[in-house]
Length: 97
Image (cartoon, rainbow, N blue to C red):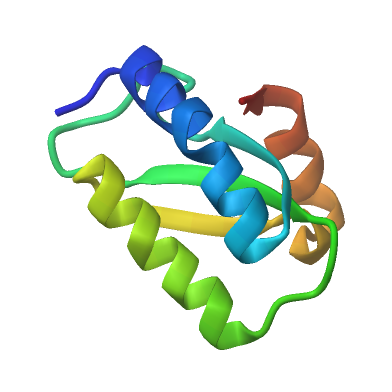
């Protein structure tokens, strides 16, 4: 299981690929990894913001690509899709890459 620092480092090193391939503007980690409450079977929650719209298929491809890269199931969340209450909570704890 990767540590939060290892996940952040891996994402930082891979961010330029995501920018070129998926128009990623920013990435951040939130959830159990940030709160240090993760277990062996936890997924990693990643908040993403794009510079241009992408299709649902591209979004799913990106989520799968990140899961393979990190060897952890990734739950990818678009900043634009955040609902007000949960969005406030996520934005208060997100650690940007």
